Structures are given as C-alpha cells and as structure tokens.
Length: 87
Image (cartoon, rainbow, N blue to C red; front, top):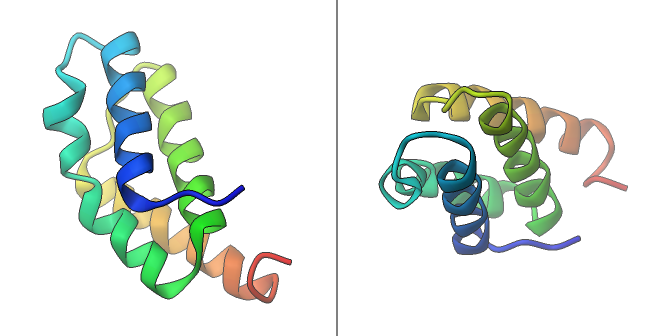
C-alpha cells in the first residue's frame, strides 16, 4: 500500500478522535513533518507502516508525542533500508 503524508495525518486524526479524549486534528498535525521525512527518505509504503504503528498505539490508549513518532519513524526507515526498499 502507498500512502501520502497528508493521508497518514488524516488517518491518525480519525483514530485519535475515535480512541482518545483529544482532538485528533490538533494532535495529528504534529506528526506531519515526521511523515514527510519518511516519504522523502523512503516511499508511501513506509509512510503507511508508520501510520499503522502510530495508530495501534492510539488504539491502545496512548497518543505518542512527536518525539516518540520520530523514534518510530527511524525504526520504520531502518526496517525499510534493511529490506532493500521494503521489498
């Protein structure tokens, strides 16, 4: 699957709205630079993987900080590089 950074932000907005007592639009906007960096260094599949990972954390009841999202992004990028571009 291929996902653009703005689509990933929107997915997290919906997940946060549905799962937490926070406003997803405000919280998810903080992740946009992280998604954009992942899109620049990898591809839409890596953006999708990161969005999925962050969404799971939200569903589990926590809202990762932008710093925690950056740590998750580095993990996704490392996995992506290790698997030769996700293949």
